[in-house]
Length: 456
Image 1 (cartoon, rainbow, N blue to C red):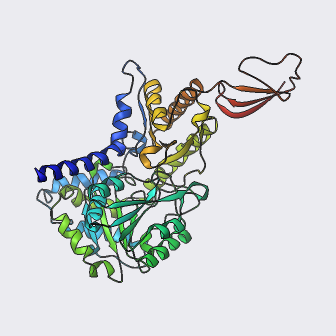
Image 2: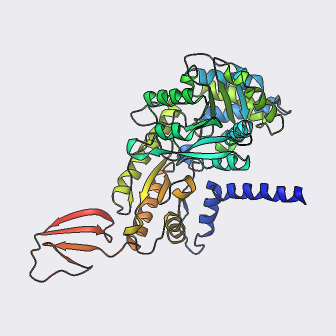
Image 3: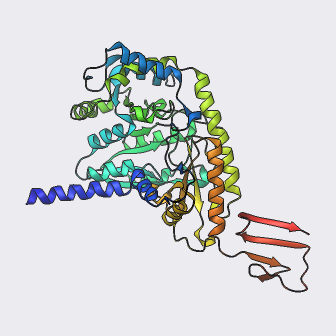
């Protein structure tokens, strides 16, 4: 019975992890869609633009995959960690942005970035250990840590400082049992792109704390603001870096499930600590990415033209501009920092301006039910009463979605207050004899704007 009870406890931890997952939240929202509403559902809840034709992957990737299949050279099981040409190609691809050269031995291929997360969290876990995870962040880290009995210590990202890491809090949270700090750049869910100077401070902080950095760079190079993408591996000589990435986002093929876990550690600290060997041992017990995808990856990484990436960035920039402008017209949500990368905006929800919305989850459920638009509640990502909106869809659908969100917020807004010559009156009326030269609408619910002044 003891083993059964232990198994039940393990299941409960896994179930808790699934409850906070993005997929679990999206399932709840989809279950609330109105089947009688004939309008198309607009998915603004996850980072998968591939269903939209404007975000089709490059023909180079299509051809590489086709060639790999036709060659019949990749029908066998792949070796643990990936086939040599594929690992070498990933090493060369990442080395383009580093001050030193990675080797194939530094690369382990995984089934997408999610498996890379699972591998490194499992390898670093031991009884009594803890890990530092950003809030808001990607909840798969929390789920994996919970499943491995690894204590989670959240540090804040500061919205007023472009979602920079609160490094003072990091130093206060860490102790001798801290195994790593997770840094997601470009950011999911915030769209932040950290500067070289900030990442250098992160590396120096991690060095003082004697912990490695887990650098989640699945959105690497998907940037469209003033800060260029700087890989954390640039600071590998300062602190050991475990870089996680994939072709999912930059090549718009999340279903191909090809990711990597790369050791950037010129001084060999992780090898000395047997982390590298443990990663390979763990991979020996798990699934490899499909051999045919590994066979295609050298062509994909080496032959993709820059204009493909530029076109994707252009589309994302246009979509973000539309999203940001529309948000300005919606009273109850506020965009504090315009994203500079990834595919998301995080907006703050003010439920005090809404009549019958209790929190962000309630907002998203009712939005799905009434407007067939799905966005992600911030509570799933660690921030209650925030919302994550994906803008990586075709522009007409995005405009339609924003109009539906605007209509929803107008419909649920509290009655407007009119300020007339210093005297207040409720919706629809005005005080007799008042001067109508200036009507200032506060919380203007029916117009769906933050504030407007109308001159007669």
